[in-house]
Image (cartoon, rainbow over all chains, first blue to last red; front, side, top):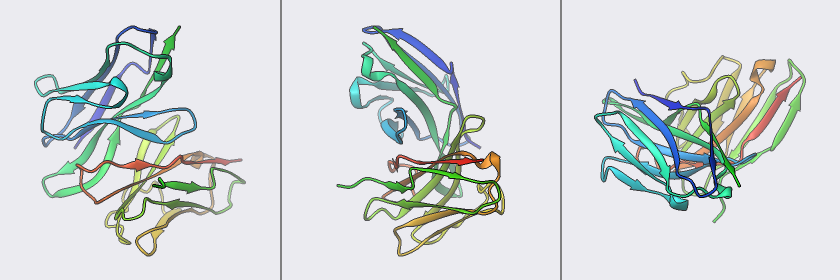
Length: 117
Length: 115
């Protein structure tokens, strides 16, 4: 079975500072991993995904994530935070077993990012 | 092109009433997913459709919940005899196919409040 743990329900950074949002996964098969962002009263938007190609994945809005199998991690980073990055971020793993895929996502609890001016 | 749309955006209902939530996926997307987002449970998967077929309904929280999809397009999630614990945001997503590599595009959600 697959699961995702996001460390830190709230993260606060200053504008221009490094953003680091942590995600650890558990998966019985090679995982497909995703980061989504949710702005207030909106749906989820895909930031980036890992699908077993390059371990360093670049996404939209300057975000990137590195897949580390040895650490079962997929942390999200951005070198310099912007006020517009304030939102809730969700890490997810695609539900999968060797019998087949439903394609549905299993989400972490989310991390709310605040950016201080 | 148009994204995933959901209606209504907000729904307030009395306990015990039935509600229908609608999802219009992106045209041409064969896979459709329903999720529920609540403060206590986070984001939970409810059900998915491959075309008009829902192969696995085990994610639905109770037999008061049902869903259908017609014409490979619009889907309706129905909650019968609503309870206060059903209060949540119901999100719909669609993707090109049922495969873990495909991106899911989410709608804005329907906020359901049961009083």
